[in-house]
Image (cartoon, rainbow, N blue to C red):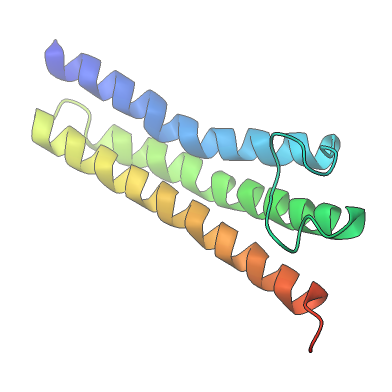
Length: 124
């Protein structure tokens, strides 16, 4: 019973994180937050003006939707494979899923920052 509870919680969180990426991306695309809002892609270049803010948030949102659409089923499949396994196996799968989620989020941050810098950095 203890392993079942662990598995259910791990599955909810493991699938929920990339699903939240999809939801956040769709929310930003459908209702762009105003510049400097409490959520959105904030960086030196995204806060320059409204155009750079929208450019950054549109790119981030599209990227998060694509990543989330890939990782959500992958996480679900991974969690199905560890159903009924021991605690260490469940936690190993869950840890790997979260590691991939974090790497994907960091990648998207650096990728959008790179796009912003290429478009809005003025040579001195």
